[in-house]
Length: 301
Image (cartoon, rainbow, N blue to C red; front, side, top):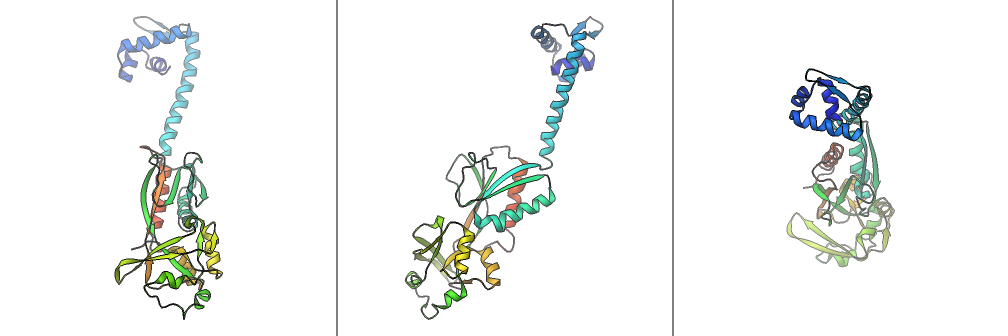
C-alpha cells in the first residue's frame, strides 16, 4: 500500500523506484501483487503516462490516511524519546520512598509535567513483570538474572534510640568488647525483613576490624515508619537510615547508641526489565533518584 501511494505521488514507477531506492521491477511486482489480491485495477498505465482508475482513486485516499497515521505514530514515538511523557510505575522500600524516591520524582515532574508517576512503597520485592513495574529501587542486588540492575548509590543505617529510653542504661554501658552482652539488656525494635535474629557489623574509625553485634528483637514492625515510631516512643533500640536519623536527631527525638561508630553501607540498585531500549522516562527517573542519593544529606563515605 505504501509503495502504491508512492507511485501515485511520484507520477511514475521510475520516479517511485528512485525515491524508495528500489528497482523498477520490484515496484512493478508490488503493484501486480496488490492488484491481484484486491481483484481490481488501480492504475491504467501506458508507456507515457499513468492514471488512477475510480477504484484506484478511492483506494489511494485510504492509503493516504493510513500513511498519515503511520507518520504520526512514528513521530509520536520519536518525540517520546525527546520529551518524557506518560505513566511510570516505581517501587521502593519505605526506607527510600519517602526521603529519596518521592522527592526526586516530584522534582522531575515539576520539570516535565506530562509525566504521570505511580509510586509503590513496599518492603517486599515485588515481581517487576507480574506487577507491571517499570523501575524498582532496591537495597542490595537482585537475585534474578532476568532483570538488569545498576548500582546508583548507598546509605548507612544508624543504631539509635530515644534519648529518654537510652538514659535508663547510662550506668550500665561501658562499651566494652562484648557489646552484644551489654546491649542485651535493651529491647530491640526490628523491621519485618530483619527476622528473629539480628547481626550488625559495627565499624570504628580508630580500628580496622568491625565489631559484630548479635541482638534479639523483642518488638517487631512491618514498615520503616512504624519502626521509627516505636523507637521514638521508647520501645527500644533499632536501626534507622541516616538521612532519616539526622532529621529526627535535630528534633531531639533520636540519638546514637554508640557515638563514633557506624554500620556497613547498604548498596542501592536500580532494577528494571528493559534490555537495550530503556525508555527515556525510565532513564530520567533513575538519574533523578541517583542524584538525590548523592546529595550531601544522604551521601556516605
